[in-house]
Image 1 (cartoon, one colour):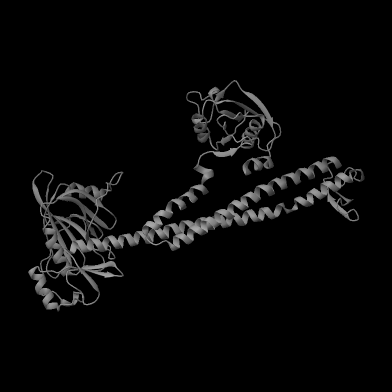
Image 2 (cartoon, rainbow, N blue to C red):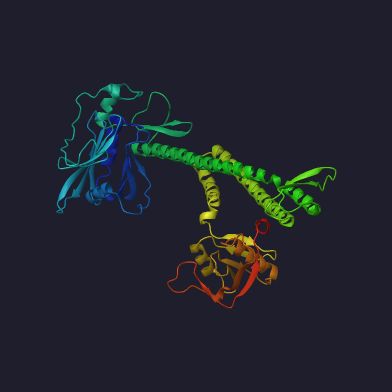
Length: 505
């Protein structure tokens, strides 16, 4: 939204009415400057160079931004904070606003500072002028600090073509503006403020205003809110689209892996046929034609390892079969989880598209943030959580730092599990109140400790366990390094199938 010179004439009169207001704070954004003024009340007076936003408007005062201010903002604070507003003027016929403030130089002597807002051309600009020289410019590429600057005077004959289509004729508008007699109105469309003008326009529904600055503030607040709504909708939609694409990619990959496990049934039949016809197979054979256990009239070709004996080949086939079945079960759970996540993300995307207003989008943001945090659970969302057959909770750390935090935060009566003399996760078994921890619970916790260690694929993995009160971290030791005593040892063989059963629970 741009202001014509007549609107700037009225703004200058209204700002002059704030004479004596003190500048408490200066905030500088990329394309606007906000003076926090104290005049009977504290409010922000914004000078905005975005053409879609009102050039000058009031806004509520927020807290000062944390962190160090950029050099340009520090410069403005040094010159303007503590200064007092002396008045404002707009040269007749010019789209330019000058705000005069009384500040202090470095010696403490009073001096005049001029905040100049230039709204002509396609690129508005803001300047701070002192003693005839530019102190600061929002767009420094046009005005170098230290360069001379002369405040322009009024035009003798302001061109009427630069005025919008008011109801009054241009000559009458110029006469009223010169006399300082304005009748500000608010233009609305569908009940929403779209423009604030010093005189009634030729077309459009209008509402009288107490002053133009009030109307500009309403228009600016509506436009800023609309842009925030648009930006938030775009941001949420983009985030959901990225996560949906990632889930779809992961789902396609998992489906390909799941298809590869369809050979598990063939391996089982090979193993059963070899088991039934073990006496028909000799050493060193690369394959064997054996009766099919399900169709005895049909021969089944079983591929063998010639370097292994018949019994060893049978054991190898059944081992491969168990691995494929375990992987099939694990991948099946992953596929179901990914499909559920995709459905939830698609539902959220539809709700974002249908959301009416900024508040509705703000209400959806926590759910979308929750899906993002859930997707990063394996990285920074705390330890893995499982539940034993007896209902007790088992927490598994996934990094040295997480192991250290997990063990430090555990209760003295919790059970602590770790692979013996090997790198691995710290596992904490938290007993339910009033319920004893049985041998099956300890065995499952030991399986988890072995599975999330360097010995995941080993058999008969020794896992030590003791109460947390017997675990201590030596002074100066690295995170995750502990000493313990009063422990016992369990020997377990971790497998994907066993962990999948615990995970499904």
